[in-house]
Image 1 (cartoon, helix red, strand yellow):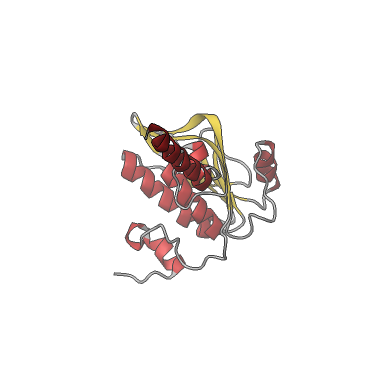
Image 2 (cartoon, rainbow, N blue to C red):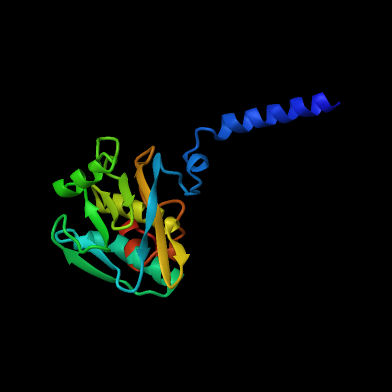
Length: 205
């Protein structure tokens, strides 16, 4: 009887391993929805506090501000902090700032590549790269829509810590399996700022 129980338990463990062994969320302990294609855990984490600012690159302020406002609203909801959203020259931001960048910027691509995040063809129009360590928090994409998807992942990573929030040290590459149209399935319309509703055609009211 005991041997039979052990055999059944072994089969269950083997099945669980087969089902979840290749799941990035299982390996990293990060439960994100949807689960990114590639996730690397790093040491440390980026602290979001009263002096933290959100930077968007000049020339893309109108489109990328949608992602910035969505992020700012999440920070305020979780911590009460109201972060300023500012424009900055390509590839430049103050230390300790959250950078929403475009992958067309050579300096951004090089920095991310040095940290193991390649902006290759797989990323495409709606993919994104997300990097966080003690000094940097960067979400980068080829388009405003890709940047918006990256911010949705960042929202899930933010954890309350003292009087602010912390984003664990990570390196993430993700892209949709199919070309996405409309708002992300995991974000309900009532949680989106009006600017994002306008972008994705979500009815008002």
